[in-house]
Image (cartoon, rainbow, N blue to C red; front, side, top):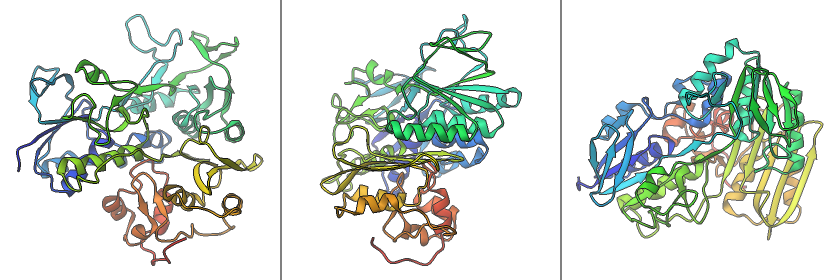
Length: 468
């Protein structure tokens, strides 16, 4: 052991992946993790699945404390860092204790922000009993406890998380409505047509949607909108708004814009001994907010810290693939289809709840939206990730192809990417004997969980011919 003291602030998905990578690379420093939540790290992306009832709490745990102990990692749960003393090379906890570091990693994630709705917060500073945030496991458990006695709910926010929560509450038997200030749902990820298809699909599934309006006040009568309409409700769930958690970095004098500004080594541009990854990091004026980029950053940083491949261990940005996981709703978004420059190939069938859009530049898919049948998401993601140049007719053919009736599963070549979060292809999954083995050896299904059904179909199958 070289004696380097590595302290990681935050015990979430990015931290877990970083430590896994360090263990695999035989990092010989001393690792300390400081996490403010009392329990082990868990998959935040699947909290809505717990709310819906499709996943158990145990399924969310990423690594048990015993795993960290077995790899001589000092895991401190229920502890919070108060400040960073860069001059002394120490972090001070709220209990007054100090931990020295040679290198420090900030993986503090993001924090929810309250929308400007009067009545959300009581005079004592606590949220109104009807109001629920949905960011942490504690938030999820509190909301689950309130569901049995609730008949109606309003979800504020029509983004990915908002739709997942709304769908989960509806499945639980709660009459749920969604309020979104933008003119259509998923306004940051899809266009107006896609938003309309989603709205129609949600209504068909029993969830009413109000777009282009804002909630302004919570009263005894219900949640009042800016158009004067009042929605009766027993629950108000806040899913709109969040920002990188940067208070520690600001207090330490590090460069912060929206997130902690880092370079290609994921080191602060202010202090090379301090790194940032995940939701709190800002690279090339961009923050991510998704699990796949956080895991990619963790892999790069592990290579930097272990000096393995130090000449090539550089972060250049990530190509995002976002998935919405909710019963009856299938959505995948590649890159930034609303801002990407290129020619648009689009197919929409609102009757069946289908909307497909690819943005193509120079024959390469640079962004896309898929709503409805996702049977070809593996192949399209592979083409997107690799920057494959397509023929003139191929983008349209990709969008027109439907899954044949009765087909038991996707026919994917071995090198087709199945889990975008962990970067796992079909061949690696076919080599696994069970879903449990695939989870442990490849980390597939432990990110957004959108690949779970495909993984279950692929494990243990004979290897297919590689290549599209």
